[in-house]
Image (cartoon, rainbow, N blue to C red):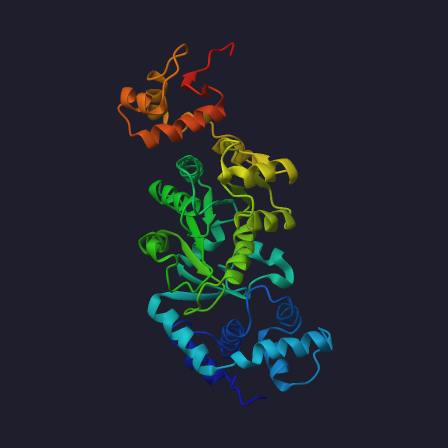
Length: 395
């Protein structure tokens, strides 16, 4: 059997610092999953089918023995072994487990009570496990959650909308899922943390390392009160393939997905595609028709039936929940004072530039521009070549 030791003693020794109190059979199963994590790339359906049929230990023993495995075709098995066996290394497995223990990362499998069962909707493409830094028990609290994703190079408008949506939803008890990236992801995570809500960052690389490096503090903050998770073992580097596969986890963990900003070929559209394939509700936030960062969201609304999202209540409707009775509708929700200041600085007759409105309101220009964008979505202001003005009831 290739000389690889899957005994209970070996498993317990490797897992001693993570799960030292397990039975012999449970330790062997968890250790076999850790081995599989070293062998396969995320979403490997051939491995997924063999493991689903036999369990991780027997599946690994069958693959290492070199004989036939009826659950897959001979060609699939031969190609799988070519992919998997060069990665077989007890030293690499032990190193990933040691790193996990040192960084406070838990190995969560389907047999654990904290496993989020909605991930199983991915079928043979479902993850074998999650390597989790943070509150492991919180994984069960994402049954009412929304994925807020979008462009890394987000505009001020996109950042503002993501923060508004995440803050109000989190304040209402809805968990927020995203990918920890720059732009929309980061804005959604920060707003959720600021309101004391629950958020999860699903990473493409190992949960022991923060990526991007500029979000090290943010990801550490998420781990303090929420969840930082990955399906690849500690020490793994994020790759393009792993980013694409990570997106399916974001879509599967969340009840619904909302794309705030996305270019025509944005990776966020990949997340939206996974949500649609899982029959999860999908929403998209409209933006200026001249904005390249909103071309993808407009495409989702026009071609893929995404629901138009203009407020947190729209997201709640997407989730099948009633509007919050204590919420102020529209852009004023959570930001009543600032929106009122912007309106007070405007006129129904005179056009004013955003810089002039900011001066009159005593606010920063970028904050005013973001609020103007939301007020325009709401229909209470209009813009033209000469600037901005309030819309009249008849207009």
